[in-house]
Image (tube, rainbow, N blue to C red; front, side, top):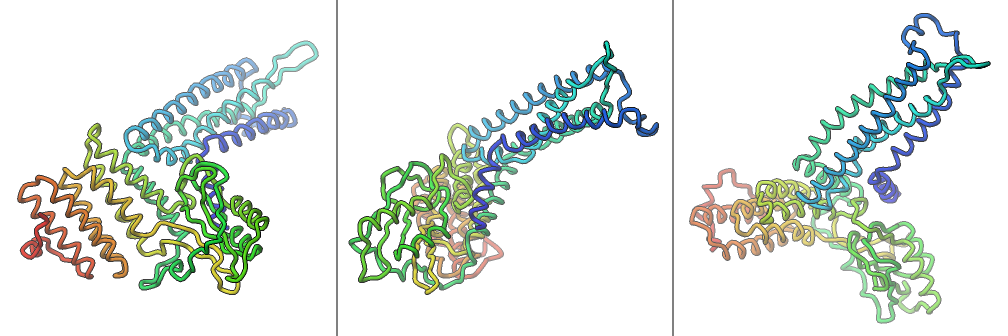
Length: 461
């Protein structure tokens, strides 16, 4: 249930229109009702309160409301333009996958909502102001015009806050921190604490029998959500086992197999009609979208951080410092993931029998996603390779010995990359020291002084 609510909330937060739309509706309602309140209390306001309210005539009220409405729609256009420019900058300079961090920004939503609400409110109140005419008295909604003035002041302050927030958000350090925090929240929501030495549940499951039925994807797109509770209910009701072999975040193509189903009773079989009905219900538990989201995608944050590192290492940008910072955040996030259960997730019925197997990335997959491309694109920069070695040391220190082989495998591949480069003696010596420190970290030792390890460090060449 928490995962389902997280998906719905993530979808709503990444849309720019919901909050401004609610603000417009509220502003319209208040703009209609508040002048009625003004008419009801006309002439009965005490002198002290009346002195705080708008005291001009009908023409002055129209001028104020017209100025507020005209200026706010201009400011709204400016705010929207700045938001679009920021999105374009983030997409071209860092990664297109970072756009979600801006479209879900509450500052942007609230600012647009405030500006549009003030504009609609001023227009709505403006229609109630009237001059004296035949058989009609002058009516100036003092409270309504005063509220419009307060909203205009709040909008000016909101613009200042928005500009300050925007200047902070376009910094790469802020974007990396936001992605890191989002990835940590997803890990805490979806993954349990890892117990060293445990065996993955998938290893105890029998392989799908030859008569297992395939389930094909209903539509093309990224796998963004799997309703685990409903999928388990479907499998139990049908007396079947369901294996979903596509992980969240992968791209599905309509008509291609994404799952397999077979009878839970080894001696039983699923007839054709039952298998078709089960396949249709399984497809209903899988949701696709046009882009990856962080709601149930454990590796999406690492993908974003790796994209930032890759973009920074491209010849057109050539910013290895940003790549090193991104690797630092990746290391911290990997450390958090290393302490949690990764790999396939098994859902069991009340009798403890495995009914649903959900494919999820293992620690080796996530490690390769973080290290693989930056190692290739930053092969010519010893500082980038050195930061990758430090990443391996940091992760090795914080993980159990049952996962040390993953780090050593990545270290061997890193050494192969170093051997293919033309580095000077000092750079090779430093990388060799770091390689030795990685091995010590895998063994549970953390050297406090790097030079002390240099004499016994193996040559990476």
